[in-house]
Image (cartoon, rainbow, N blue to C red; front, side, top):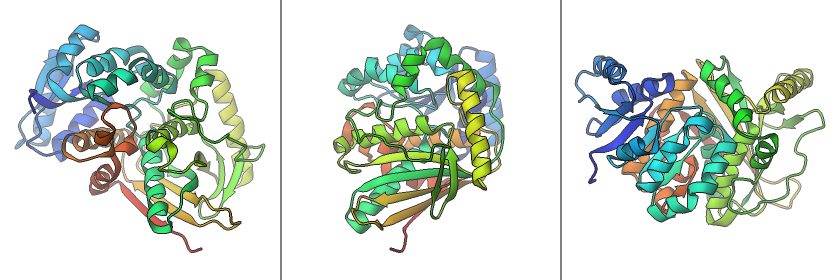
Amino acid sequence: MTREYEVILFGATGYTGKLTAEYITTHLPTNLKWAIAGRSASKLGDVVQELRALNPDRPSPGIEIADLNFESLSALAKKTCVVITTVGPYSKLGEPVIEACVKNSTHCLDCSGEIPWISEMIKKYDLEAKANGAIIIPACGVESVPADIVSWALVTLIREKLSKSTKEVILSLVGASGRPSGGTLETGLTIPEVYSLSQIAESTKPWALSPVEGVRYGRSASLLGLRTVPDIGTLAVSPIASIDRSIVHRTWGLLDGGKAYGANFRFNEYIRVRNAFIGIIVRVVYGIVVTGLLFPPIRTFTTNHIKYKAVAIADDDSPSAQRALATMEFQGNGYYLTGLFLAEAAITILRDDTIAKTLGGGFLTPATLGQPFINRLTAAKFSLHTRILDH
């Protein structure tokens, strides 16, 4: 620890940034050396006053002024071990932060769900980040953390309890309500402005972000986009399946070239619906949205409750392969949950032994923070329970 700070939160005056700052103030260790950063000293000062009211006994964070350019952000990155950035849309505003962190050996977390942008950043900076020991974890918010960590947890359970690889993880959102924010909608509209349709299509192929190619993806649902899975129910196509799948499959490829999960592994994601008729309606609406925006809408909602179920199927040639079940649940705001994920990921990088540290750096994924990250999340009231189902 030779730098002035352990964590700098860039974008603390925005909605998600402020929630992240509030979470750090009320939940992370009081000896954490941190600062908030942005362009307006007065607005940052207002945030500090609000944080002081939340926790008067905690030392206030430092204030750092930074413009959205490489020179200013490079000076910022040199002062800290980890940068959390909530400044988006990332496809327009995210690269200077990434470049500054990579070149200054600073770890970086963001909550992007913009797969074409993540793909571009990997191509530009992954090798340099590895060489410099910078851990870069994009999509470390509500978009992909649940999918990625539940896949890792189920694969680990099947390997430890059944001594088998995993053929498939099926995730479903089974309960949530809310609406996307203006910033979320802006992100969805920005993608086709920055990237061509062919770039979007190429970057969202099942194994596009994985360092190695996985199994060929066959049809996993009916022509109407429906699927029935025991212990979950009737499922319809998920509007963010390609986002989570890209991240989960990158984890697969990063961990021993796919051998840790198994050579035949694949991930699929759906939304649970009451019946097939509702599922068909969801399919039609989803098609209209994608055709209009050329990009799946992000799923960050203002919610009071969010719940997922996931089933993992062991890689077994028998017709009745053994399975594992996971449930994940959180009571609270979806944006707050993103702040929780970012803050807990930062402290995990700083204070725990993780797979990410073993890998040494580069563009990694939430699941590379492994069990220490899950332990911190469950202590923060994000519940995750797994079990092997009766054979």
